[in-house]
Amino acid sequence: MKALYPGSFDPLSLGHLDIIQRAAKTFGKVTVLISANPGKKEKLSVEIRTMLIKEAVKDMANVDVQVYSGLTVEYALNNSYNFLLRGMRAAGDFESELEMSQINRALSQGLETVFLMTSPQYSFIRSSRVWELLKFGDYIEALVPKNVAKYLLENY
Image (cartoon, rainbow, N blue to C red; front, side, top):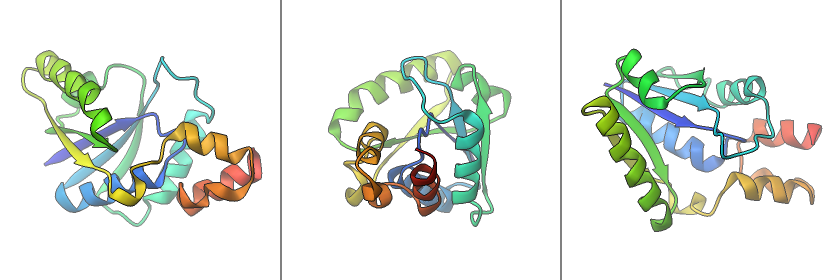
């Protein structure tokens, strides 16, 4: 079974990595799909995000990283994915994720969405908070993988 984990990952957080690691134990193949979100102004280029994510998942043989700029559901259907994977931090995420899963299911005539709750120690992490804390120094190391923290601290 193949699962597609879409997101902007700007930057990859420990919460994202938690979902990826757990999904890799559940599914035969997991693809992290870096997609553009027109509602967000992205800070890291797609190339940098791809490099950082690939480095963070390099020890997970059944995880790969791809980039796509169209509808996620199109990518899933064109590449024979069985499931869309969504991580949720708290109950507040549920309403918008449920709506999106129903839209995707209608557009795909049955593509299933699997929701994984982020482990409690990562439930407070948001990309916007990473960027805010980065302004104050090295406080981001508890929020993002080591390679991401190193890159951000050296370049921002």
